[in-house]
Picture 1 (cartoon, one colour):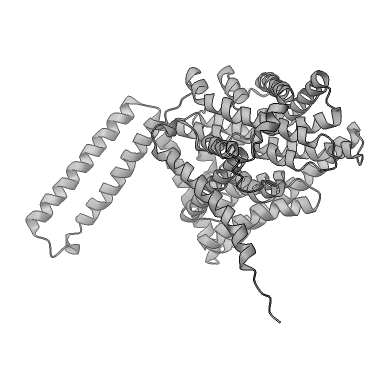
Picture 2: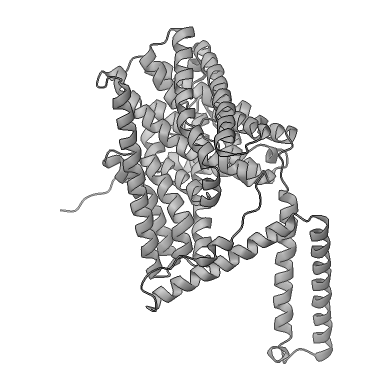
Length: 520
């Protein structure tokens, strides 16, 4: 006896998703095509559209914590970790570690004690609010960094802290949620032991999956299979770590860093690596387009209005604790590890510590049996809304005021001239093989050849003038050259392994020659 499908239920589930997808992609498209809207990061624009829908009481779908934590969060974390340079991360590891661990502790204690003292909120509930709001989510800020050409160092600090910060915040939340339920009692030694267990299992699984997949992809060259394996790795690492009692967030971050910095170098040729990177860029855009719209759509204005005192105290406490942690810990890092984080960069790290999807998911995951659950959710939503709309929309002004806008337009002009030069050189090389065009009149052929030569000469002159006017572009050219050499070496080893002429991978010897320009 066959199983009958239920097209009605399927249609009812599909329609809301298609509406969300249509609205979110329409908004994201308009944000890139309408000049007035281009000044607003598209994720923040999505939040505002979602708020507009919520204001007229149009609810698209129910934003459940499982939807964010298990479906949306792994690809967002993986994409960020895949693109995070290990060399830059290692250069700033001390500052990032301080902000991701000590910074979370400062945030949890500062927010919870403020709510407990000024509003009389029970400390176990206040601790949950603090843990939920300690997870930063600077998606919009990092996108703005890339668009404006902010320094790679600043981007690495912001992204690196956020990735590990999320993992630590989730672990802290899971440890604290049992206290109001009566299933856990707080003890410093027990909490520390649980913390290292969560993190250790997550790191171990991430490393195992990352390195195993890296070695596997050396054996074949199938771009779409390798692309699919990265998707399986992202979700598999998260689910396996959670199943074994570890941190799924930490596991995904670790596997993303391993595959992005090691696996993609030894097991993927440059073409495959580009395909995988483009795929994950699309996935991140797709997921962000949906999730930020749904965050705005979940706002309950009446609830927020009734809890304004709580929200106000939480916002003030969050801003002040972020101020203390960023400036205090950065100063400590500068002193102990010569991190060289300038006060301008510290200011951006402080004001750019937005809250978003992870905070929302943690708040919604609080069990129904916990008292004051709705107050907790309303506080978190209110604070997230403040960070996205107030801090997020003023970040460009802050960057410009601190003179941290980079030379992205200049780099774009340089990249375009280099690309035109390469394309015209290939056209000219083809034209030099005159036998390939026997049907073309000789005089017309020479005319066209002279046109191409003239265009190539013009491009070379512009490129030379640009390099002379902006000597810093020599560092960009040198970096691209070093990366090309490293790609050729890594691709050769992978090809020899696929052909059976090499049994095991060789570490690239040119890795020591790849120099990074000073990000400061």
